[in-house]
Length: 236
Image (cartoon, rainbow, N blue to C red):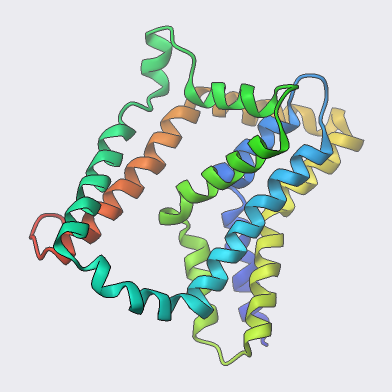
C-alpha cells in the first residue's frame, strides 16, 4: 500500500467532506437553538458515513453480479422509458427549488424548513437518520470524489479486507471536518461560532438553490442513461 494511494484517497475524502450532506446539514445541527446536542450530530454523521460505506462495498465488491442478474430487467424498454420519465421529472422538479424565488414570494426556503425540523427540540433519532439517508441518496449520482476513490481502489491488487478498510477510512476522513467543528463548537464556541454563522448565512441564501442543482443533475444523469439505452441521439 503506497503513499500516493493514501494521499489520493485522503484528498478525495476531504473534497467529499464539503458536500451538503457532510457539511451543510451538520452546520445546521451545530447551530440548533438551545445549544448543540453532540449525540444528534454523531448519530447523523454515523448514518451518512455508514451509507457511503455500504454503497462503496456494493460497488467495488458485490454489485457486479447483482447488476448482471438485473441487466435484462433494466434493459426492458418499458423500464427504460419509466427511467427516462423519472429523470425528466426530477429535472423539472429541480426548478422549483429556487432560493431567490421563494424569498420574492415570501415563502420560507425549503432548506430553512428542513433545518428547522432537523435542529428542533422534537427532532427524533429516526428523523435525523432519515435526513442523513435522504441527503446521501440525493448525492449518489454526483458523489464524484467517492466514485473516483472507488475507481482508484478497483485498479489495485489489494485483498478485499484491505479495500473495505480503506473505504471505511475514507468515510471516516469524510466526516472529520464536521467532527472537528463539533469539537470546537463544544469546547471553543467563541472561536468557531463566527465561521459557523458565515456558513449558515450562505446556506440560508443559497441552500434551496443548491438542493435544486443536486436534484437537477441527478435527473439529467438518470435521463441521459435512459436515452443512451434507447439509442436516442439527444444528450447522448
